[in-house]
Image (cartoon, rainbow, N blue to C red; front, side, top):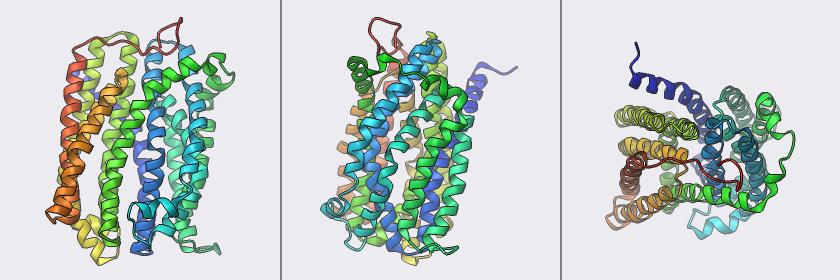
Length: 454
C-alpha cells in the first residue's frame, strides 16, 4: 500500500507534469528562436536576446500581477465557490486589458531606451525592431496568461497542453520560413523570429478559448456586475502587485546581468544568451512544480485542511529540489556539447562552455526559491516574497556580480557567480518563510466584502 508521503508525491507529480509540459513548451519557443537565429550570426542572436529581454522587462510586472489568480481561483475551487471563480477570471481579463496598453507603449522607443543602458550600437536597431513587432501581441498574451492560470487553478491542464504543443510546431515552421526566406517568403533574419512570435502569441489565446470552451465559456458568458466594482478590483491588485514587483525584481536582476554582458561585447552577450537559455529551460520544471504547489496549497486552504497544505508544500519542495540537483550534474558535466548545440561561432561556443557549469551551481537554489514562492502564493502570502527578492537579488546578488565581474576582473564568469550568491540568499529566506507560515494560521484571501470569503 502506498505510504502517505508517496501518495502526496504522486499527487504533486500528476498535476505538476502537465504544468511542466506547458512551461517547457513556452520555453521551447524561445529556445527554437535562439537555435534558428544562432545560425545567422552572433549579432542576430544578440539582437533577438536583447529584444526578448526588453519585452520581458516591460511585461514581467503585469504578468506577475495576474498570478493573483493562483490563490484567488484555487482557493475558490477548494471552497466550491463558483461565484468567486467567475469573478476572479473576469477581473483578471479586465486587468489584462487595462495594463496591456502602457506595456505596449513602453516597447516602442527601443532605439532610445537600449542605448541608455549601454547596449552595442550594432545590435540596438534590430533589437528595437523585434520589440516593436511583438508589442501588438501583448493583449492576447496577457489574456492567455489569465485563461491559463484559471484553468491551472481548476486543475484542467489538457487544453493548455494541446495549445502549447500546436504553438511550438507553428513557431518552428514560421521561424525557418521567415528567418531564412524559404518558399518564396522574404528573408527577414532576426525580425522573422519576432513575426513568428507575434502570430503564435495571438493564436495561443484564441486557441485556448476554443480548446477549453467547455470550462471557460460558462465563466465568461455573462459579465458579473461585481467585477466592475472598484474596491474588490483594487483588492485583487493589492494581492497581485507584490507578485508583479517580485517578478520585476527578479527579471530586472537577470536583465541587468545581460546588460552588463552587453558592455563586454556581442560575444559575451551571445554566450550569456546560450547559457541562460539552458538554465532557464531546466528552470521551467521547478517553475511548473511551483504552479502545481500554488494550486494544491490554494485548494487545500479553500477546503480548510491545513495538514493537506503542509503535505502539498513538502512534496513540491522535494520534487523541485531533486530535479534541479540532477540538472546541476548535467550542466557541470557536459558544457562543451551543450554550447555547441546552440551556435557555430567558436568564440561564443568557448565562452558559453565556461558559463554553463556556473549555471549548474545555482540550479538547486533556483529550484528551492521558485517552489517556495509557489507555496507562499497558494497561501496568499505575496508581500514577504517581494521583500526577499529585493534583498537577495539587489542587496546580495547584483553587488557581488559587479564586484567579481568588473572590480576583480573576472568578466562574464564573475557576473554569473553573483547570480549564484543572489539565488542562494533568496532560496534560504523563502524556505524559512514557508516553514514559518506552515506553522501558523491558513485563511482564505478576502476580495469581495459582505459575501463569501475570497
